[in-house]
Length: 382
Image 1 (cartoon, one colour):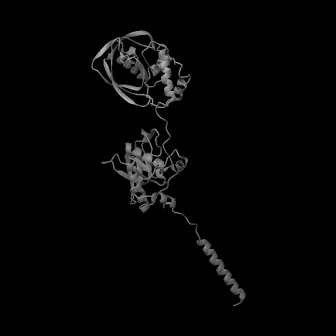
Image 2 (cartoon, rainbow, N blue to C red; image 1 turned 135 degrees about the vertical axis):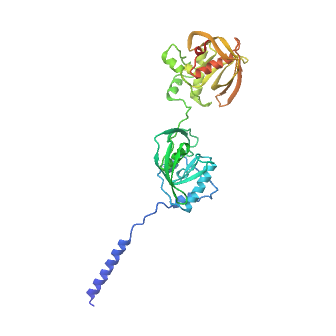
């Protein structure tokens, strides 16, 4: 054989081998159903008797994890089972109604739900769950989340009825209709799988911007204006239901409201005043304690009448700073049981009596608490 022929054959085989090798060298594709090394390090960091630590959505690094889209897992799978067992320990340790894997740093589609719709309220695991259908009707729930510690509940609308498709730990596919409260738990957990979390919420008892502007418009040694029923806009405020305040001796706005209310009262001969009378629909009152030595004025937060005597009296001479020029006889209880908060958060209960000319403390309390409920003394005149 000539050298030229040999060289040709060698080149042919070399080309063929190289070409076949390139044809067979397909790119390596990672199976996303399998856990990463980082995920396994979190899952297997402790045994199944140890709960996970929740991420904190107020921490930017944790929030970045919570906002990721989660991926499916393979079942049956030993790591998935191990993850489930530690999540189960976590949900039981914290007495929660739901938990999702992203909440503990694993961006995988696995949730555990407390089945309040089943006997014994068992915990059940949903692997790779998705909501396939839902009702139009919704219910608003006040929800909290383990990833938002110390936050106040958020108002969230949840579908009353959902159809959920998911897998069990042994790989069996399930389709189930779930309703009411348990459906809300599922929706909360599945929201985490899509990178969602509850919105950060404010204290529902915090003062509004308008209230703050009104209260802080002047220094605390300046009286607030007393509203009058002869003014239409004032009368609308006086007839509104008031809401509680959050007792806090460090709350500058609350302390300013209390001081400015007292300054307004000091400019009159009155024996009590309620926050609605100065334009703030909050449950705060000042009362002159005619039943105590020195007859001091005292402030009460969130006062409520929780008990009344059977006996009533017609108290003659009832009047109001907000209803000028009118007095009358009103029907009042002889004694009342009240509960209230002090500025430092101390909660108190006591029985208050007094319906005489020299001591009508019970009448003052009933009069001021009426204001908090949008009731004026003229409504009780007989």
